[in-house]
Length: 250
Image 1: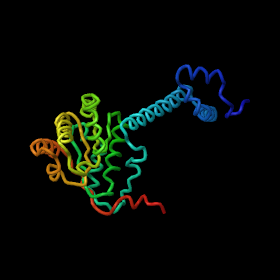
Image 2 (image 1 turned 135 degrees about the horizontal axis):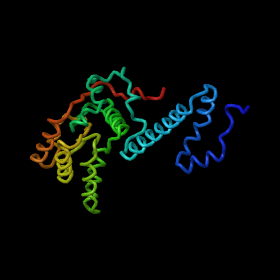
Image 3 (image 1 turned 135 degrees about the vertical axis):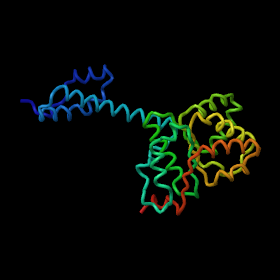
Image 4 (image 1 turned 120 degrees about the vertical axis):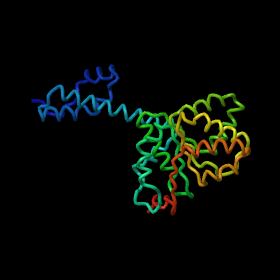
């Protein structure tokens, strides 16, 4: 009698590769050994094997979407320490994790001082959205508006704005760190206006939205955009000592 852990037939490996199921070979030996020992029904064995492959493909697709979105693979809410000294509305965060705000095309304003975890929460929500098949785009505000300024020169501005206004969830990190010129103000206004009622934005900032208008080049445009955003946004306010203290090497 052959041992349960005997190697997979080379011909079977070849057939799996032809069917684009080559990754199954990595778990097939283990699954076969278990099936022989448990005298598993062939139909049940096939179901378990295909569920393995379905899960693997789902995880790969999620990872690819997250990478395309510009999300940091390490910044997930699984790593968020809920016992942190940072103060925030834990019930609201739990609600945000359901992504109901994305379905309703609402926004999120994560505001608070430096280091309290605004970026981690924003990216963590982005990972959840990506895992659930949503299109996501993450950008640092400074880099985003600099990139859009260059896009006006190389004739890619229209295409980039189309992408920014069509994704299910747009994350703009560290917004309003410094004054914005007319070009950035116009781009910000267009993004918020086009996404109003059609898509969600997570904005992180060290400042309250009431302070944003003074930093923009054209007050009327700024007031219009901020009013649209703020009155359709859930406010997640964080306060307390820097969360980065939790990550300091011991």
